[in-house]
Image (cartoon, rainbow, N blue to C red; front, side, top):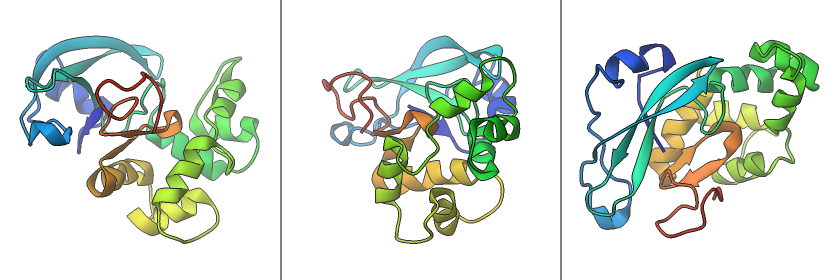
Length: 192
């Protein structure tokens, strides 16, 4: 998984979609030595309840494919990083968090609860281990590193990639080299 800096869900289809261009992205694998990836089709995914096409790239050297996500989209979830950020800031309780995230419907509280925004969540513990010491609440620590204001999780995604080559997927976890399992040949869907 990779993301395009400055391209959110609203602009993605026009810039990177079928009518747009293939982004100029290098393969993150160390053995590929910065080779550019080429287009490898699309796949459909729901984003905020509507069907959305995401571009895939392939590295000619290692043969690994990467999904190219909008900057503000969580990996493996039908939610944006802004919604996760709003839920994390809302306080305790799935009802309060689901309203803040704009999640509606009968399963909204359950969906937000599965995001695991508490300090004992596995992905939050891994995230905190990569951040410098700071405030106790994980979102406050994120803002201490990447700056305050809206969009802190999107900025965190860029920061983690530039410092550790770790893709921040939101509630889905952290992925080394942007790949489930972290390296070619590893077990699939095992974050970190």
